[in-house]
Structure formats: C-alpha cells, structure tokens
Length: 260
Image 1 (tube, rainbow, N blue to C red):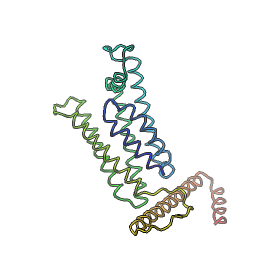
Image 2: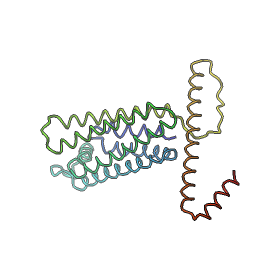
Image 3: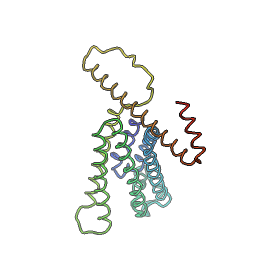
Image 4: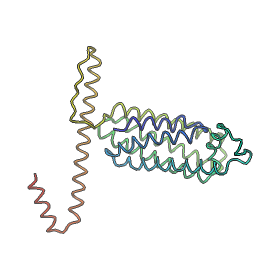
C-alpha cells in the first residue's frame, strides 16, 4: 500500500537528518523512499498528492542549497583542498541563506499538513481512530515548532528558542515516525483482494489469532477502499451530469437506470 517506504523514508529524512552534517543527503535518500510510498498511497487518498508535492519541493530546495554552496563554498576553504568531511559541512551550511530557510520551512509545513490530513482521512475510513488523533496531535506540535522559529527570527528576547525549536522538531519527527509505523502495522494493504491466504494454520494459537486479526483489518480496509472508490465515481458522475443540458441529463440518467 505504501506505508513501509513512507515510514522508512520519513525516518531517514527527519530523525538522522536532524544532524546538520547529514540533513541534505538524508533528505534526498529518504525523500526518494517517501515518494515511492506516497505515490502508491495517493491511489487510496488524493490528498497524499499534496504531500508528494511537498517532498519534491523539499528535495529541490535541498539540492538548490547544496548547489549554491558547492558553487560558492565558504571563503576560508579552498576548493582544491576540500576533503569529504569538509564537503559534508559545506552541504549542511545552507542555513547561511536565510531566504532559503523560509522557503524550506514553507515546504516542510506543506508536506506535514498534507500528510496529517491524509493519514487522518484514511485512518478514519478504516476505523483506526488512534492514528487520526495522532496525526492531528503531531500537526499541533509542528505549529509549536513553527511558532518557535518565527519568534526566534523576530528577535524576541526569549532564551534558548533555537534549542527549543530543534527539540520540538525532533519530537514531531519521532511521533510521526511512530504514527507511520502504526499505519504500516494496522492499516492493511488493499492490493490483491482476490488472493486467498494459502498459509497453513500455525501450531501456536496466538499466531492464528494474530493472522485472523490482520485478515479482519485487511477485509475492513478493502471494503473501505471499495466504498470510497464508488463514492468518488458517483460524485464524478454527478459533476458530469450537472454540466449537461436538461435533455442530455435525462437521456444519461435513463441509460444509467437501464444499466442497473
């Protein structure tokens, strides 16, 4: 369904990516995995497309910052003597460009807002309410992070705002990673719905109970996806009919009744 690559990519991009030396490479590597997962998930919830756009823009901004610093490395370093560690430091110093930081923050917000509402929608659809609550809670924590950044940039005399922002972003990243892992474990894939489970029953009762519970979640997810797809088709059909003339609409409605 896409939860696995999304979880793995998010964890790479935002947890090890908190290290300034690793932020750009981790975002690029993790972003690739996130795109893989989000593109698959967008088949089940269209708002994942906005999260996909957010990842693409974040990766583009990271590449832009790296490109600027590779073209114009720090003056105290000679491009001929830069080692691997020096280049990693150069790639991590995109914060020197303040305007780029604000663009990055904007795209970070776009991604997380789209991710939160997408997870909320699909979690409620399959009856995993805890993950819907987690998505909104993590979005509130992100708001605290953005507020700390804005206050720090405005020059408000509050001590340790930068450290608070870093800690809050780490908390948001960990909480979102836990939420996505929970989605991976609890929201079953809707693919292969006609495939039969040919596994032999286990000798251990708890394994059979676990399999039965997972099968129940799969059935629930498939039914929710089917209902969602049918609703989308009905809404699209209603839009098409609304754009037709009265006579055309009557003919189309008659055809629909005959098909049924």
